[in-house]
Figure 1 (cartoon, rainbow, N blue to C red):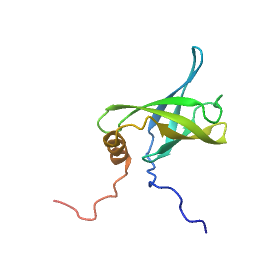
Figure 2 (figure 1 turned 45 degrees about the vertical axis):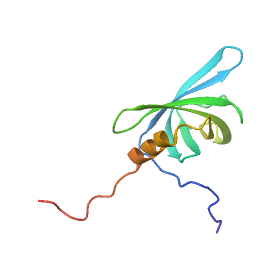
Figure 3 (figure 1 turned 90 degrees about the vertical axis):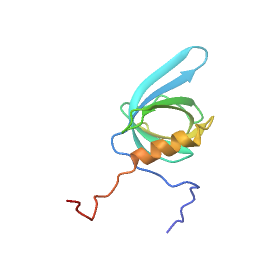
Figure 4 (figure 1 turned 60 degrees about the vertical axis):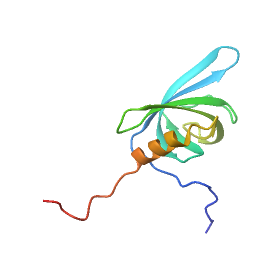
Amino acid sequence: MCAEKRLYPRVNPKNLIAHITINRPPDEALTMDGIVVDLSHSGIKIKLSAPLMAEINDQITINLQLPKSGIPICIHGVIVHRRSPMECGLHFVDQPPLKSIDSLMFECVKRPPSLLSLK
């Protein structure tokens, strides 16, 4: 069994939509949507709505909205792996403020139902 090598734990949000823009010089921009598969303080994995026409190390901008509060977050990343043309993993560059990532992760954690019934 392989030991976990990640520095930060992953959170699996439910139905968190990502709006993705790939910027290419000089003025080309590709846009698409996807669903966030998982995320951590250092990266994010996204399942795309269409095959991604991007390469490893392409720069990507991801726009998300916090699921409960609706606060928008803009994340800049670089593609570090592609599991398939429909799924990619990104490492954050220009690290977003820790508070923003903490807020995003906090809102994405699914809380288990309470064991106590308050009446």
